[in-house]
Image (cartoon, rainbow, N blue to C red; front, side):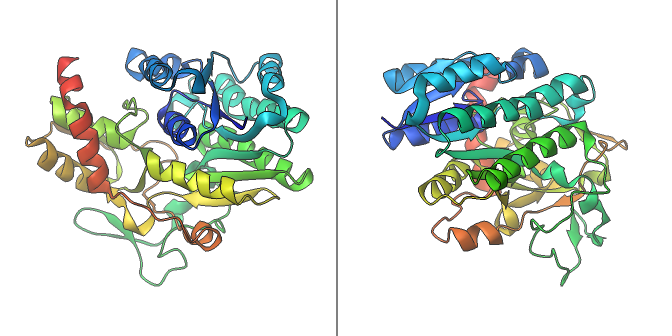
Length: 357
């Protein structure tokens, strides 16, 4: 029996990985206590997704309602499966840099201490397993905002010929920058994952992600940019742009493409704490103004948009991931979905549900 233990298993990336690796024949142990509801209210709850997974996968999926901050409970769950655990995908998190400032101790407890509990449980019970961590591009703080950018009609864009013209690589410094408290807690976790890989020669990897999305995301204003924007377009709910003239750029990647990335690393893991930037890269990126235009076209109606001059602290003006390192290690992986594909899927799969609610 080969077990994949997945934290945040009811969330967007977690649930995608549950179904992906179950389809490969693995048994799945999911850990999720619906903290997203605590962070974002009823609209952010993932309970519906847990029920869907349990109904669809039956005995292949065992759900554990546990808090990753609870060291004893995490140790107990790992002990239940022991060396049968061959893969750990850690997606559980407090995911919003806006929310983190409300309760820094809870944010750090979930993001940093929870990650440490998982790494220690792995070292004790299944040290030869593969550990995959969904980190964030916020570990680079606001350093990307120092890049030479040019203002275009609908977006900011980096100057041609710059070191990062094809996207920001793992060489960017994480020092001397404002991370936001969320970025700081995720960076602490990121460094722990690297260190367990290097110090103990374990098979760990940090994926520093841009905008992760898909039609099953419970998008809210503070987290889930693309999903929430499309929801506003479909329902007529007002949408607020925060700063940078709405020309800030994000790269966007679908949850199914991410699951395939994780599979590639799991199939050919590397020891020593690898770090990869992961997002849509140059093939899949969009500004807020461009996304609004796309969403209006898809929904067939104009959006109600307001603008606030106050950008979010530490928010990136332009962030596009350089996927070169991962692609050089795993040349067989190819991204299959563009921003337009993703937004159309989000709209088509959710429009009826959104109208009912």
